Length: 233
View 1 (tube, rainbow, N blue to C red):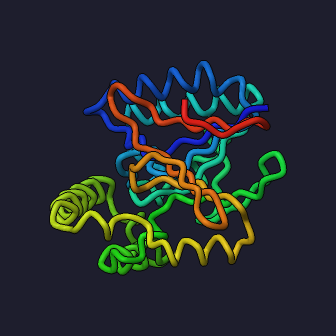
View 2: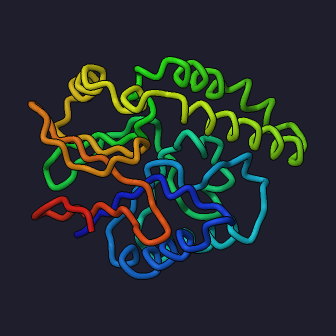
């Protein structure tokens, strides 16, 4: 039995090479797995399940083919695609999980999350996150015409990119104390997350923290977990 974990692909029309890597993974390795976990930011941004494009259709079909074949596919929303919802789930067979989710991997209790909630030193982002995750705000946004939502998303993305360049690198990483508290709260011995784009396996004092990397045009960060080991391939 094999489990795969990926995150931070940021799929978009301007980087078709990454989409190609994703499709290759889904059509080859993923088909032979017990389950695939996508831990957020599958898309560069998501403005609602009613959005349509060739890229979206291609990705939906790839996930649907995977789940129809018998491989389970799970998703935890990221900071870019937290509006992926019920319609997308129904069309693809992908199961949407909560922000924090615990699974048993061959006897090892493992906590999964996107990772943005662990970066508590970035106070400005956490304030923004709390606002956009309010259900009434999301419902209001999704009622807006699609063209309006696209323009709003583009403005938010541009502002986010500018602010990211101005922030110290250390505040965009996880807060060690908060992360350790979360692990203790969920009573697990391993944590898998993405978001920070810093692929690594950290052996902390009381738990293992595995960070999924972001995907590039010539590199796919894929964590493979079997009964024998957990490694990046």
